[in-house]
Amino acid sequence: MQVYRGMDIGTAKPTLAEQAEVPHHLIDLVEPEESFSAADFQSAARAILADHGGRRIIVVGGSGLHVRALLDPLEFPPHDQAIRQAIDALPPEESRERLRAADRDADDVLDLANPRRVQRALEILEITGLTPSQRAATAEARAVAAYEPLLPFAGFGIDAAEALGGRVADRTDAMVEAGFVAEVRSLAGRLGVTARSATGYAEFGAYVAGESSLAEAVGKTRDATMALAKRQRTFFRRDPRIVWLDWHDDPMVRYDSFRAQLDKLGLWNS
Image 1 (cartoon, rainbow, N blue to C red):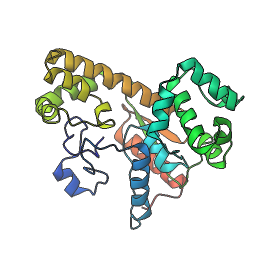
Image 2 (tube, rainbow, N blue to C red):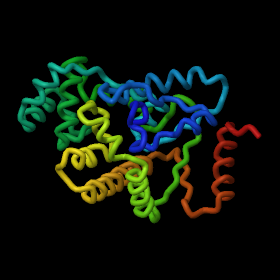
Image 3 (spheres, helix red, strand yellow):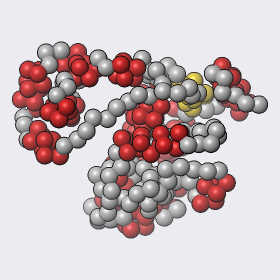
């Protein structure tokens, strides 16, 4: 979400001073009205990796989809708005039966209880002619399932589960103190399809619109942030390539784990 201009406080965007100290990428690329999909991120981020001048790149963030889109051979099939609208108009059961009729093994590779995934699979089928089973059988899909990256990297996760509730509460309060209400007010009516899904903006948008109190906006933002963190932790915990560091570990213990993993992969330059 830091790609959006004007969405600074709510996305914890690095300050101009921080960006001057260490080069940052993918900051302030587009206006909040514009769509910036995971496929757009993949293209922009891989271009940076291809032209980094030999420097080490640190990828930081919470979106598992975006991390995997950058590091793994994840492919994003095309979209067609007209086709999607026609599919969205179908009853969920009819959508499932259409997919099953085209692919009798669809249940084995797709969660057919998830209407959005069924609709997307039908859209891809209509555009490309590929069924879910056919797409799951490609070399790229098998590599993604096996967590085989496109390039060597060292992955680290910091587990702060016990401290998370307090940190989220402090972070939300700090956002308000930093002027988040004014930021949300300045963006009213400007958030596009992707930007409006950013945690905190919808919750505080309701307050700015007079539909809730400030206390309600703060509480809902805390709850939404905790739910997001839980989803992120579950997603990343499935990735066997990530070395987990405990929040309470001594900094030198975390450093030693960090260096050992880099050295194991031949990525450490003393």
